Length: 213
Image (cartoon, rainbow, N blue to C red; front, side, top):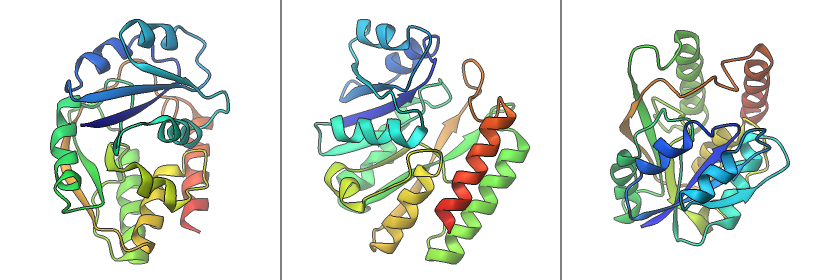
């Protein structure tokens, strides 16, 4: 059906469950973004395509996976075990049917999966996107599906945490049909690189503000 791009930084514990949960029709591309554990080796042993992106940054990893993808339709999903891979089929359906150009997964969080301050920040960002573009979204989450050549043509420049937001803004400016589908969201495996550290959270907020400007 397509490629699913999985940016990964020290996710060796989560990789087996993530790959096992993907539908058979999706080809996994794990982008190792400077892991100090054996993320890449675990992914290779389990049959995933592994891309090494030494330049640190969520956007850098996503872009490297996008460039390496070989299928027409591409999906993005965190590689930390927080998403259910089976939801990819529903998120991809409108793109495959020609009914949407970009579909995002709107997270339906289990208890403890999504800290309240991040929910508030995400809701605020979604409102800002609506004011700027007219696109009504509830979530700017990292599970999303679009066509590879169209994404490359957007020319997304951010290579850090502003990458997902810039994708939506550029897609809206280009007149894309943007939609969202509810997806499950559960507590991640291990510690988040964003919410788990003050520095990670500060970088994320800064990158999002730059993308909005």
